[in-house]
Amino acid sequence: MILKIKKNTGSFRNNLMIIFILLAMMPASLSYSEDSPKKKIKYWNADISISPYYDSNILKYSDKYIQRFMNREDEGRFHINRYDDLVVQYGLGLTYSNTLIKKLKSEFSFDYSYNRYSFNNVKDWMRFSIGWMQYFLPKSNFMISYSYIPHFYVRHFRDEDWAAVYGFVPLTFQPYEFSKDDFSLSVQHYLFNNTRMRLYFSYYRYLLDPNNTEYDSNDFMYGIRVFQTIAKNLSVNAGYKYATSTAKGYDGPAETKETADDVNADNYSHNYFAGISYNLPKILRMKNSVGIDVQYERTFYTTTNFYEIDPIHAGRHDKNLDVTFNYNIDLAGNTNVSAFYSFTARKTGTPAAVNAEYISDEKSYDQYQAGMKIKYNLEF
Image (cartoon, rainbow, N blue to C red; front, side):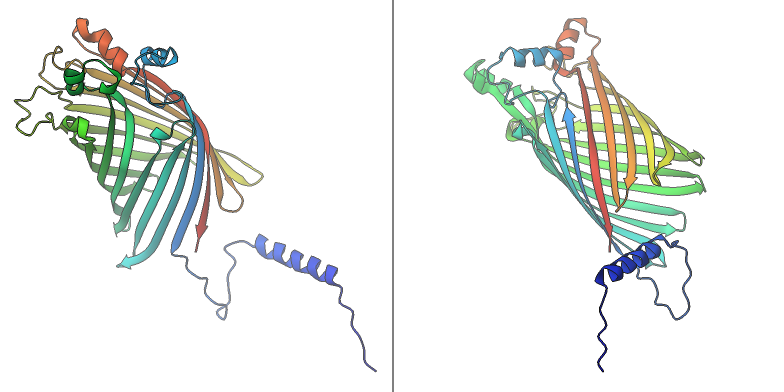
């Protein structure tokens, strides 16, 4: 007699699902027997992100120029379809971690981001960066990084050299664009279990388009930042940065900075910043937090030119305030979602009363950005 066994596929699938759920619910600290295979070490980490956000003032225009744009004035100045925009930033990151030097952690990273403007493609830009982080003591590490922006459009300005030849016609408005190199070094040390301090240095190199080479510059930045955990759910940070910018200051082959009649954008700045982060009660076992970051910067331009020669820089000083609110939540499946709102304001002035209104109209602005970011992380 041949016995036929009928398989109950529905029950089998249900039992398999129950086993899978029970395995997934086991604690990560569950011990294995000596005969069990070792857990595979994951050296690679990849993340993909998308961040749509609204920008209220993409070219950082003062109220004066926003009004001129709305009134269709200054033919040749405005090469945008609207002064605000919906932007989507796409991000890709790849990290390799291992213990390469005396069992101390090493980490190599690559990041790429691309910013796409919905109505003003002239503002699209991208950024590449690579980095190496290395622990040289159990509680101390350094980070070396390089980033590159191949092209960034600021806005169109009246070019005085062109105006001297053609007069005040639309053609004399020329684009102000640059590429940027960023070489950075930071050293971080854990002073105590809940305190860490970071010292950092950066060198920026700006290379302008052919019409604005007098603005080519070499910038140096020095900073310190301290991170402190106050309580289980509360952490704060504060820091200071000092930066200098030395501009080329001339654009002719036979000129020098001392003999040129071009603008001189040399400046230095003090930047103070602080932040606070609070972990909220979990939502359906998902971690979430809120935070706020504040930056205040004072910039001083050091040209000795009179305002008749260099009205945009003579005696100029800027006050910059940046405030950002954010909310983060970790979803299931290695996905993080954050929402943010950022407000920026720059007030520009000068001791020369006769030039104060002009500088403010040219360089003061308000701007806010609001959006979200979705980030997926994968280890392998």
